[in-house]
Structures are given as structure tokens and as C-alpha cells.
Amino acid sequence: MKEFQRLQEEAKLKAMKDEEEKRRLEEEFEKQREERLRLEKERRDKKKQKEKERIQRKKEEGSYLTKEQREKLERARIQLEAAGIQVPARNTTQTAANNGEQSVKKRVLYDDRRKKTQTNTKRRFFSSICSHRYSAFF
Image (tube, rainbow, N blue to C red; front, side):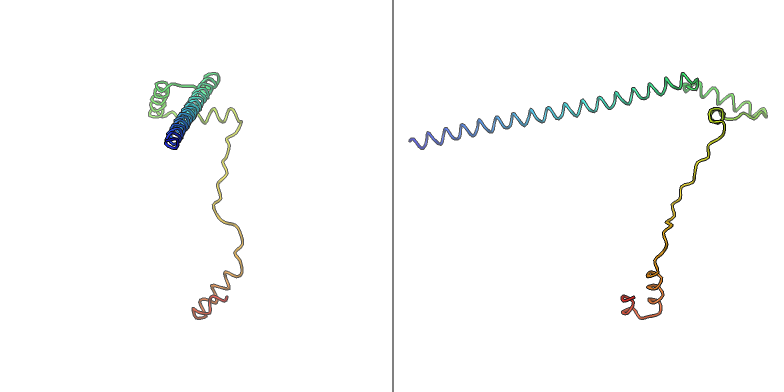
């Protein structure tokens, strides 16, 4: 009888511990979820703020144009070119005016400039001359 009561008490204690552990894990999971949401919101806000600053900077420079303004300028440029008047693109004149000259981009080099080892050339030479089973030694 006493052993039965002891087993019941142990089962109750275990159930309580399991419930507390489950509640603790749920709270921890909820905190992690809230932290992820907070970080995501901060990232979105930072991105929006950066975009607003970029637009504000362009407005101060006088180079910010809405979509309608860009389309209107493009139509006017096309009409002028049709009439025989050469109009430089807007971006190139601003770049040249700001820098004083056009910037030239360097080409990217994708070639491997390392010297080829002498052993590779020997191996190829001897493999073409010697039989297949001896080519592994060279």
C-alpha cells in the first residue's frame, strides 16, 4: 500500500516536472519567435530608411525623377533624335560633370597565371610514349 502511494506521488511529481518543462520550452520558443519577428522588423525598417535617404539625397542633387518624369524625358529625347538633334544621355553628362572625366572600369581577369609544373609535362610526354602500366611512375 505504501509502495503504491509512493509510486502515485512519483508519477504526480514526474507529471508536474514534465508540465513545467513543456511550459518552459513553450515560453522559450515564444521568446525566440518574438526575437525573430523583432529582428525582421528592424531589418525592414532599416531597408526602408536607407531607401528614403537615397531618394532624399537624389532630390537634393536634383537627379530624382519619378517614373512619369523619366518617361516624359525619354519621349522628348526620342523626338529630338528623330529631328536629327543628338542629345547625350542624362547619366553620362552628370557623371562627366561630377568626375571631370569618364571613369574606365578595369577588365576582370579570369585566367590562371600560375606556371605549369614540369612534372605534368613529363607525365604527359611519357604517358604518350610508354605503355599504360608504366605511366603511373612518371
